[in-house]
Length: 193
Image 1 (cartoon, one colour):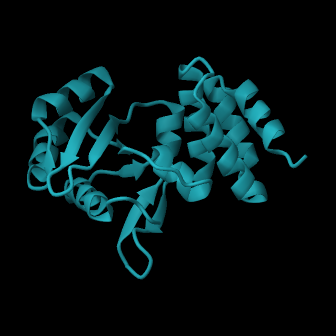
Image 2 (image 1 turned 90 degrees about the horizontal axis):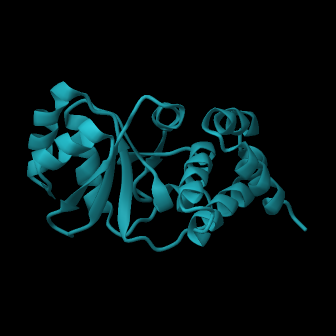
């Protein structure tokens, strides 16, 4: 896995894991890992956090990240993202707080350990190919079906992963999230001509 700032992701993973929480890298980094890599301005991460973890997580982030406890609490209460900036590189993290829905559960439960850098033994957890397709389809739907970047990411993962994808799982998740039509369309458009 090659990312713009591996040190920032390493510091993020260590901070979250030091509190005993699960995280998973998503967004264009996960889509690029399984599909076609592309430039991105930030790193999307989903974390599983509970109310009694807020102070410990804030303290764990303090050494390497600029963020506030208020932003974390607001994200936790409103189920929205907050931003954390890596102090050394100023890499921006969009941190999403997991909720109890089928996509967030699948993203955390099916996360896959990947080496941060070739030749390194440091592991980060990345969203599985199946779940990143569904997550990207959800973002595509949120854009009123206009985000070419999201659609290209979806098709890139499906084309690159091909028969390695667990299509049954994808169909099940699509049905649970109202994405059946878009998944079917993505499968059709990714078929070789």
